[in-house]
Length: 558
Image (cartoon, rainbow, N blue to C red; front, side, top):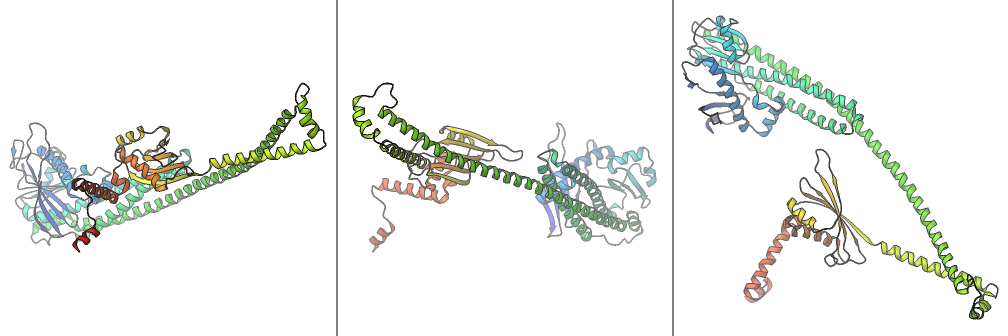
């Protein structure tokens, strides 16, 4: 739970956050954090230690303090995670490789006294005192006496200021801490560039071995996209760092000797210059990585072009095969027509032979001599002419019959429609398919892509389809439940259905099976018309007569 204490529009906000996290049984933790968010990117989170375990605020051990600081860092990261925008979280994920909730913080420990109180260098004794302080501050860098009662200890992960004058030194301490946070951030960013470089080298290795695995091209494109996005976001982070350094608020110049000594020890001007130089060096490194990535993208384009050329060559080769097969089919069809005529002629001549009795194994009867042999066969050329005429008549009839069969096979309407409408549920789809006699079911499954299923069946209710029942191919996304496309084949010679009515019939079946919402299938306007018609029917049923139209109403008023 957070509460805004005060704010200055665009400049800063001060909040009080009560942290309520689940704890182990028997542990009671009351934790309230003060949060200061500045426009330059500096975020301070602080609290006053009232008690830890059985120790009050005047007697807190470094052991307990180290454990509480770790807990506060984790809790504060979670609090900030909720306050930041999605864009800020994406930058932190790039920076810390999706481990931003465990990022380190710079600790500032300010106390009025420390026990035992010694000279500063005695705390850096490489013995017991230093080991105790390392729990809170990390590796010690320096320890200085600011006065006879004030001591400053600087570590890698934080600083400790002890003494009665700590309040007047806070502005310089906090400014130094903000610079140390930026320095630590730049150091982490420098390490992030090594990870980026390693990723680019892996992409280069995959490019060199792209022919060893058909899926390497997809891996290359995915890795290039991720690396390009990371470089772009790191560029933005560097721009924000420069802007943060330019907009940071510096404390006023020191007036007394203790403040001057503190400023001399902290060397904030030198630290700021070092950070700026490192940011500039980082920009050059990222610029170099960007150029290498551009070269890898060019190599990938070459690979893609080569694969496209292979595809086009395969298509060209397949087209040649199809042309040759088509020519062969044409030659075969012509030969088949000739053979049909030859076989028809043989059949016709066999009929003539049977009628004339030429193939009989006994002498033909007298009527055959009287009506066939004497008037037809015995006269020169008559029997031959009749055979040729008979052949022409049979061949003509055969050709007409074959054309009729060919015309019967034609006249089929093939309708391909892209639908792209949301399906309602898998249960509704099961109900829909249960009413169909499915002929074929195919699935296309690719890693990382939705499953596309193609179902085929033939309808049987000719009355519903206004004539001939169609053959339907139904393609849908089984993962995201989307109807992708329909393909309907129907005999138009025996059907009066239009293209729109065919598609609407399929959609109506889906709606009836509760596989698709009616407003999705036909639009909200159709749903509104249906509701209006239902309301009109209800009014008629209640009133016992048709409702007056607008024109009738005006007539009554006139």
